[in-house]
Length: 369
Image 1 (cartoon, rainbow, N blue to C red):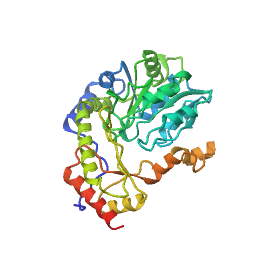
Image 2 (image 1 turned 135 degrees about the horizontal axis):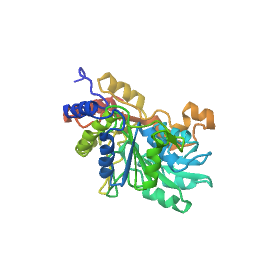
Image 3 (image 1 turned 30 degrees about the horizontal axis):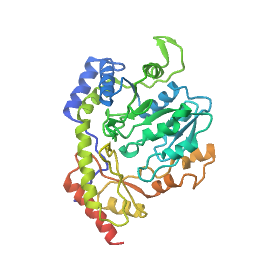
Image 4 (image 1 turned 45 degrees about the horizontal axis):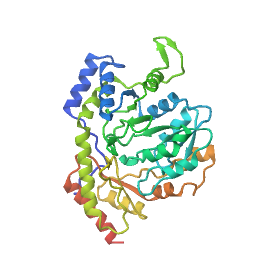
C-alpha cells in the first residue's frame, strides 16, 4: 500500500470545471465577468444570507470585513491564537490590534468565557474561527458580547457547509468570511475568498473596498484594495459549489470510519464529534497525541502524508512575539493543541481501504510503544 502515497488532501478538478473555466476565458471579461456576480448570488443563497462579495482570498475577505466595520486606530479585535496566522494579520491590515482568548479543548474553538474576560473598552469585534470545519459556539459568544455592541465576524475559511444549531455557518454573526484556497472543502482552482452578510450596507462597502475604493471608474472616495476574484476562478467555484454538500457528506462518512477504527487506541485523542444540531465538515481530521512528531514520522515513512495545523499558535509566531512581547504559557490550551495535533488524510475520494491502511499503521505505531 505504501508504494503509492496517500495524500493529506486532494482537491477536485473535473472536465465540467475545465469546461466552465475555458468558457469563461473565451466569453467573459477576465475581471468582473458575469460568472463573478452569479457565483456571489449562488453562494449567498447557499449560506442563507442576503449578500455575498467575492474577494481574491479569505485573508482579503477578513481584512475587508473589518475595514467595512470601521476597525481602525488600534481598536482591538478578539480572536483565537489557534488558527492560521492570517486571522490575526487581517486585524493588523486594517489598523486594529489583535487580542487573543484561549480555546475550549473540547472543540478547539475560542472559549466564549475567555472572550467575555478579554473585552476591553476599545474592543470593536470578535472573530471566532470554525477551526478544522467544526462550528464555533457563536451564540454564546454573542451573548457574552452583545451588551458591548461588538461585531461578530465568523472566520469560516475552513467550514463551508458546516451546520450550527440547524443553520449553516456564514449567517451566524454580522459578517462571515470564506476561503477557496485549493486545500479547502471547495476551491476555485487558485486563491479566492467570499464575504457574506445580511447587512446590505456592509456588503456595499465591502464591494467598494475590494475594487480600489471606487465610486465610479476613476473616482475613489475610500482607500480600497485591489482584491477582486478573477472571472475564471468564479466559474470554477460555481461548479464546485454544486458538489459541496455531497463532498461534505463523504467527509463526514470518512470521519465516522476513522472514529470507529481508532476509538480503541489509547493515547490518541480523536476530533470533536458533532451532534443533532452541530455538524462539522472535517476540512481536516485532526488527532492529538503527546507522541505527535514520532507518529507523524512513522506515518510519513509508510507513504501517508500528514500535516500539523498548526505547529505554532499565532501569539508565538516570531513577528507577534516581536511586536507584542507574547511569551510561552500565555494561552496554554492553544499551545497544548499546537504541540499535539496531527492532521491525517481527509478528502471526499479517500477510500475505506485507504482509511483502513492509515488506521492499521496508527495501531501498529501505538502497539510498539
